Image 1 (cartoon, helix red, strand yellow):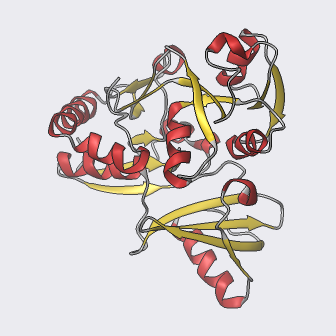
Image 2 (cartoon, rainbow, N blue to C red):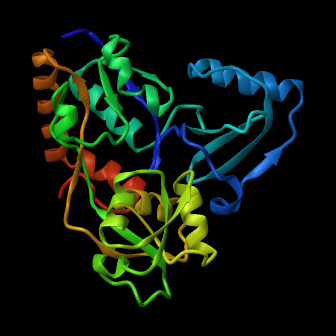
Length: 295
């Protein structure tokens, strides 16, 4: 096994993580503080962008949100793209996947290097051997297993209907029928709404889904439990709840190229140790206020 493991990572949010999808600043995060861009600000932001292997391009505005010992840097580019970078007070990357990866590296006795890129390039980077492991709540699927290997699962989630707390009409998955749901593109969650004959209001991202539910413009949104737990962790006073939860479990794991049998064996052994010691549960409770490391 290589002495240096490069773990490719995008944070979630869940939940957690460095986010490369479009981001709705105002509706979800009420306490974002925007600052005007001047020459020094631009240099600082571009330095952070370079450090994280992001593309440097004209910036329209930046903002930040502090809390829970961490701070988020939000970047809105002139072309409309929005990014989020999550650091702690010592300017270290933080987030659920980041901490799990650091704990894994420590258990393996190796150094970890994080590389942040867009989701579209996440798994593709393995094909060109840019890094050894990928993590960003990547679900184990039959299709992906044809080409890649997975570690044992380190995170479990379930599909969930998320509504306002005062909604009493939706209490089970079949109640989707006849109701409006904000959903992103052709995701698996959109397919659940279609399956139960609900009406879909198309959106660009999870944050827009949440915003429409909060505004009462839709009855709910279907996503996974991790997304909701992450929302509650960042916004404890949210007016949303999990109204119903599906039984189909989604297992997330580290992913790597086939043929790295020694790497897989060592990663699996390390993850088992982290589960047994309670370290994964500790990290999970920090970011989600619940243990998502077990079914």
